[in-house]
Image (spheres, rainbow, N blue to C red):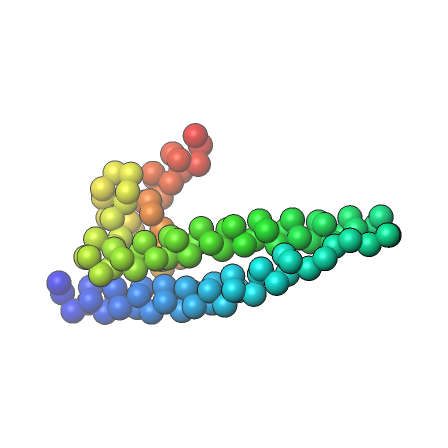
Length: 116
């Protein structure tokens, strides 16, 4: 592997590890928020608390999925298969990986998946 490629992969690894640590900290705090009692005699207050828990649950689910994607990307980095599109097998562009280091698909395959 060329030195430039190793350096680039090292920077992606650093970004992925940093994001993983941020997400782990956020996910670990979420169960406490979800366990908060939302019972109240005030109907409006109950509705607000209920909506807040719903948003928290959806956010937690999205963060959990992102963590899975980051873990998969870190595994691929270790195996030397990072940056290969799971749809077509072609290399994912460097620009796409810079924007979304845990991307599973090249832009073309992602657009096709989004339409379906």
